[in-house]
Length: 456
Image (cartoon, rainbow, N blue to C red; front, side, top):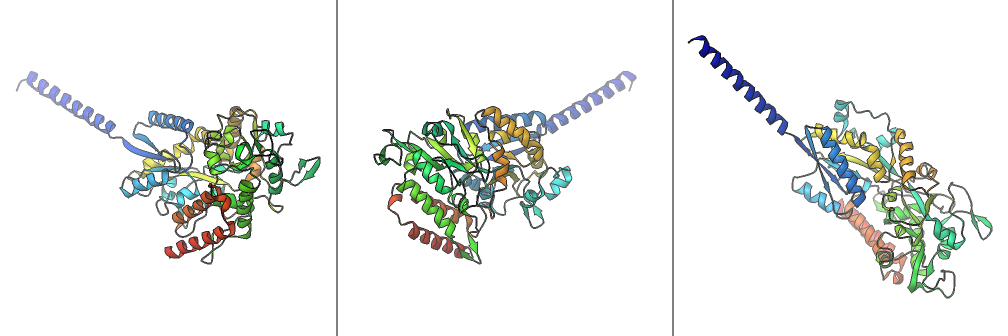
């Protein structure tokens, strides 16, 4: 074999080797790990939120060439549990789920991965997060979540409607009195009942204190529990567990709240019914319509006020028997225990908690669990809603959050929560004016007890 032949063979080998290596690189590059992010079990299914979520996904994929993040957004918060349950049952569970609250997580107990080893492996820093919030996600030795968003309960109020009625705004500090008819009175649910009627107006301009007021022609209401739930509403009069020593309880405070709501709906007419809420006038987003003077709900509602033309602000929640109880929502992201790629799933999780945190917290209307992000979060909200002055209400309301949490778990949780919802549907429904509230509460208690016993 002469030198020319040997050189030719050697060159062929080099070229073949190079081609093999190049093909191998292309194969490795093509073998991305796909991670699915499921949204909707908590907030996140509103149109303006979806746009921002898709932007976060696009940015992640640009900066993480080895991972392809795909997002699966449920049609609505109401449809999300069934959608996620179907995916899990089919063996196609998403890798990352969130943001989700306490109820969302409780609906899928036993489904979440212990993050402890992943946190250690990735050297994820937990020190910025309040220890008490971190510990709230522990299940024995397992850490099932990391604190991310807090949504304190606050009172939204329409400044324009208060101005039109010549009424003072709700207080911006806990303990401050409310000026009513020239007198200082306690800022309580009794006071809300009085001014709620003054702020409820029919088509002829009569408020609900006027004998000529027509409750069939209301065009403006004084108060609502915006997108509320039974247990959330009830905990404004005092928190308690559903179950004590195996027995379901409906406390005196909860009964009082149920009666207060019924009175507001059917006796004094300052709370819109379900039919009124769904009407073209309120369009299913009552406070944002500009036809509601006060709305008690969580901070996440700032997500859904971009259509409101009126000037608005936030105040402190009213008291019940001298004490303020302001239920709080807590949301975070979790990893499904069945993920085939836990390391990559945690990479996505860490991205949502770090690079994408402030952007998502802002669009979700959340208050960050991380103290270092809180100032920037409020500044972002202030730019979006310049009429709001009382941002200090947010931090102050956290201290008024009652325990146990209004979404705390109990046996047969999913069916029990549905039964609570059924009670609220009955209360607000067209036949609600004819119900015996105490009788229905007794039935609710009995039905819940049967569900708890069934779980045993």
